[in-house]
Image 1 (cartoon, rainbow, N blue to C red):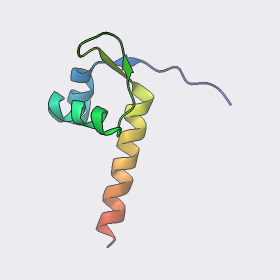
Image 2 (image 1 turned 30 degrees about the horizontal axis):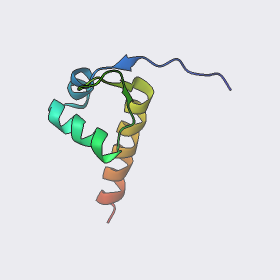
Image 3 (image 1 turned 60 degrees about the vertical axis):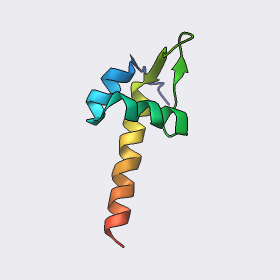
Length: 69
């Protein structure tokens, strides 16, 4: 299995990619819905792009399963 290289994204980039406010991304980080790496003492968060991809995939699956109810 080939290991994928992942870019490290800032909170603002993730927010733009997900179409939400950066405060929403911080909540996702605090809730554990989105894994992160802390890079500094204050607000130094980085999120791997493959984790954002996985998060988007899970959210889409959740939407579809909700629609089937």
